[in-house]
Length: 490
Image (cartoon, rainbow, N blue to C red; front, top):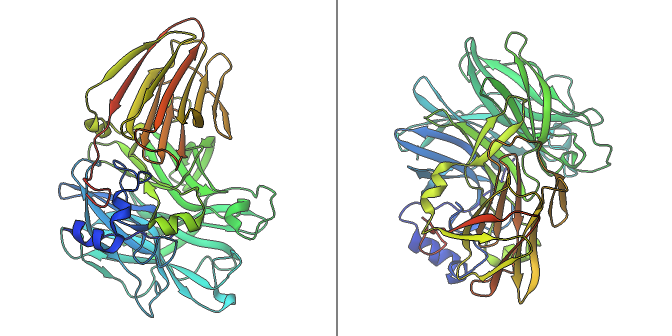
């Protein structure tokens, strides 16, 4: 959907420090190797694209406050998907225009050699013209287009009129946003997130020859309500946000965000009838993760980023002066049985320092003080037949715990409980990334849990690992380098 966090022109460090103040640079809850805005609020990743030797990542940002609102498109560039350089804001609301109240989420493509953004704009309208049905009913969503005017992708020219001005005739949508285009042999196709009360969320399918004139075809895929009564249709499953449709390993995948979660579905795409038939489904991440966006890297890999949400009260992150972070880049594949597989992109490993290895015996405990909150842990899962438990402690009190119980076929992390993925796993390992208040855990290359823990402090936090069962395991740890000297910018 739409949100923002301040993206500043380079060089940005001095300006960011002046605007954000020194407290952000000293905030140990703020990640150091995850990408994030210099200050204020950020959310959805938008339009990742490879262009002229650089990765470009756009995202939702509020330049004026550390809370959601006044959505712009932030912009950053990288040569490795890990170290980022902040660029000027790419899209800002146009007074009186169809995006006057915000530039919501969307995608980037290259058409006729020109990088092109397709995104949702919102504008205040009378209630009967609104498309967002979340209790306020005052915003109309339309699909808009902008083209790059320079190879740095810093300057964009907006088409004045929407390329899709209204939802399909006769459809009382619960929302109408977050376009996802792709190219086929006979032209461009695009999925737009939508839904209907009592019917369910859906991804609406459009076709175009030039990205500017679109014909509505039918739903690409549809769901059903979850039975909950909710003012916001995203909570009841009657609205799908941020659809992302792509092909990997000869199979197709549709991602969508609803009910506070990200669902993945894999199956077959009928390229003649242009319909997607789901065969398998699951959750992309079981934690504080939402609204992901993927793209095809120049080497053919499907790479995805997601918005790591805040789980603390709004008053706390507003006072902190920053909110939200981007997940690590994740590589997606689809197994032979249609199971979505996900691992951190290999580029993340360049952040590793000297490896620290230890052998953990059953019944034993490893405990160590963490000098810094930048850490990667890796341990094999295929060889232990009991359970491994990883804890973070403050004054010997547990503040976070992840347990992988192979014998009991279960994973537990706080209130999250799920079964282990069925064997064989593509990479039977457990990987945990700690970065300030962010913890990303990857279980067997099949499941992920993103956690937020705000009480951790360097030199006060202890890491504890214990093992039950009959076999020892080797644990590898790496300190990870920060991508910024001051937590403000790159």
